[in-house]
Image (cartoon, rainbow, N blue to C red; front, side, top):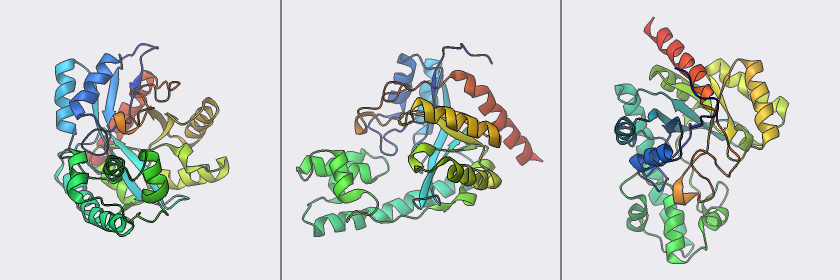
Length: 294
């Protein structure tokens, strides 16, 4: 399949299934309206929105790539995010692993609420669930509840004062190890990609060493195009991917109203992820699945 040289894609988006504000079908409709050639749905530790998104894609004639964003242990800050693109989310062992991750998040949430209450922030789980709209509850929904209470002015203040790692209401959660996540995604036919590597704030030599280690575990791609990556960083990441035999992907990390400055497809305004990246991605998917079938 060939794509126009000007066609764009977005391979990193979130919906109400995790911490986005738009339903899966709404994200797909917005991608179609924006003229994107394809969109991936990559909610945090859940694939609950994929069936709705895939159905919307079929109806609108837009390619929807089933994906997920998994939190893993490792890296300079102790945690990283790995995208899985083209996952078979109905595969039983994969679905069970997603359920375990959701259960771990569910166990963490009351602990966050208790910490906030002890600090005088009267957030209840009912309030937080209301903001989640039936989706997976996460810290973003605590932030929304805190804004509603008037405890903070905005989401950024909620994370900066209370919810971010190292802040007083932060609670560690269960995460997969890097090698576990790679194996899980590959077994489900997915292509593992390191999300937003620029946010790791690593010098080139350290980042390259990390990528070599992850590649030995099964990493296949690098999200070089990202909302918060400038042109110079994007080019450096593209070169590093080429050197290490990794494919390049890109996405906005769209969350809707939860991150109002980030637009679908164009991020903060300058993001351009070319549709030509789809073919290398599909080839990696096909290779992974062929190896799994041997």
